[in-house]
Image (cartoon, rainbow over all chains, first blue to last red; front, side, top):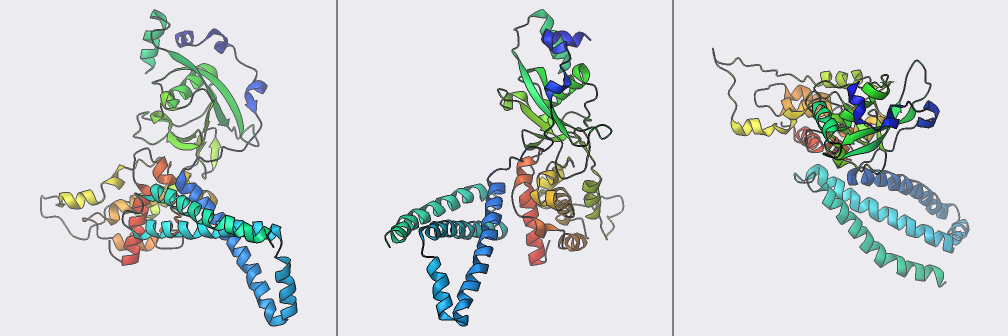
Length: 145
Length: 253
């Protein structure tokens, strides 16, 4: 094998299999780009919003059971932890809403697939602007009562 | 490229700069392993070499049991699609100079199809979807005697992008929907349906649209654009799927 002379000398020595082999069987995470990660975020926020709405319908329905029970449950929401949770909730809904518009444009606007990446950064920008407007005002309310 | 290697090396060692590249390959031998395992190899490579050359060097000089498909080695046959550093690429079109060789290069089989050995997967589910969309010309009219079917330049350009497909499965196996639900036709089958749906000489667009409008058809697409990123031929795959969706909604091809 004359080709072997090209490589370094130590390369021809067969390394021990246990030093070159890892038993970790899983494959690597697929490195998708903006499109894939926007979809992952859209799915996570969508499922999170679904569970919020489920609880929200239940606690609102309590007012039909008894107004006292409703007040008691809503009262437990008035804590700083819930206040921070509301930041996450609004963040999820705002992303889901803006990215939803992006997906509608991809499907119905003939140039949508061409500008999908630009639109993703527009979504992130709009999300950031909305959150900058919302979060300080909201946190002042949460922590001053 | 192997002839260049042999010519350059003995005459002057530093005529062309070469690099030691570490490849970490996900190996699986169905006779010996329960689970796939990662194995690393050091190969001496030039910047202009391709990942396929590295695999050849490993197979020819270090470990003959390394198993992978390749035929033409020039990006046309579509045999050597694999996941290189987490993205679906053709090994024969991925140059060392385009990768960060200060870190190891991860090479593994494409995802979502049954792993058979090392970098080889069972392509049958992929080709089954392809066959199902009837990827052949079906015309109900006869061309004039001694004549071919005439098509205008504009009509030909309508489906030009989707004629480029080499059926390497890089797109289908990059699709998160296909990973979790192998029933989905997948981007490649839709691309090849698109090629005939929008061909003015073909008369069975409606049959293909019916197939793709079903439960496992184009509506499974979540527009993640992984297929468009993965396509080694630069086909705008998600665009093609969107055009089929739009034809289904408007009822016209």
